[in-house]
Amino acid sequence: MKRDPRLRLLSSDHHQALVMVRKIQNACKSGEIDLSLIGEVRVFCMDELKPHFALEENHLLPILSKYGEHNLVARTLSEHEQMMNLATHLEQKSALQQLSVLLKQHVKFEEQVLFDIIQKKFSGAELNRVCSHFANIE
Image (cartoon, rainbow, N blue to C red; front, top):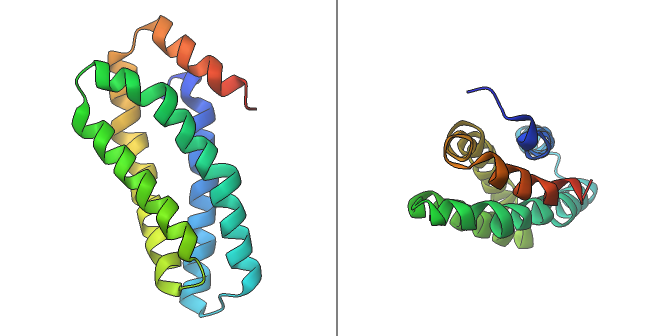
């Protein structure tokens, strides 16, 4: 399904997340995980992921719940929590690897499942209201 322009900011965040996934995967493959990468990933998690998750949790997920999409909401919240937990253990190679795998899967889930359902179920007014919050953080 073609992405509604009002959700493009979130999709753009997803692109940035996939760039970080690639960086982590390349470092893990080469065995060259240094403190600068860990610092970069930590900053990404706090400055990019955390606000992205907050937007979804505060503005998208409550409406999805209203439409009875409780399983999707629960999955999204669980994955957000897992990723933020992994972000507290980035000095461990296994945590970095798990974060990259989960983040990649999560982006795919949101782009291919969650956003499609949002576009089908949300009214135009709901999408406008939700996405007005996204514009405030640009």
